[in-house]
Length: 215
Image (cartoon, rainbow, N blue to C red):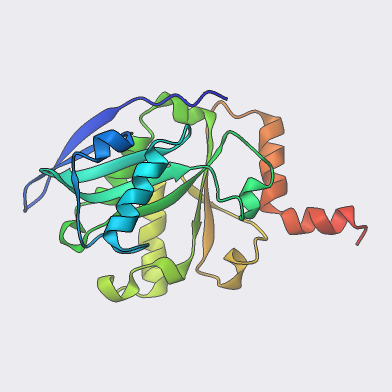
């Protein structure tokens, strides 16, 4: 499968100043900017910046950023699922995962996350993908936002909805380990029925495994 990428940009006014939402960007293009020191949700900033530059240069990798002047203050990543996750077991070239989305506290409240997702879906080629996001409450910034688990879940669902992702059932053990966790899915318009069936088997992999064993 060829992974085509088309660049888009929009501007977002905030009380602090204007943000540029843009991407997908290459690792070289990202390297001309500074990565904000408060982007720490997943790794220390330097390591996370190195990680997203690596993702940007993967054939299927997509990085969309929000920047204030020359500083990256938010981003979203797309790439194939981790080989250790069930979602990689089907070897589906057209299955990509929204791996991370993060915005610094100073720019929260301006729908930056929603704008990142909206812009990422402007590329018509995204209609050739099944996009998933695995949401686990232990990754959420409950302390920083002051929201309860269920309030945060509601905000998260609304933000993901801006990119066309909706909650979908699954029997993935980690997701069903807590009722606030969820799988979010967007199925592109160009996805055929056979690929939807393959994806459904991944969503309910435990059930299919039991069937194969004759249980």
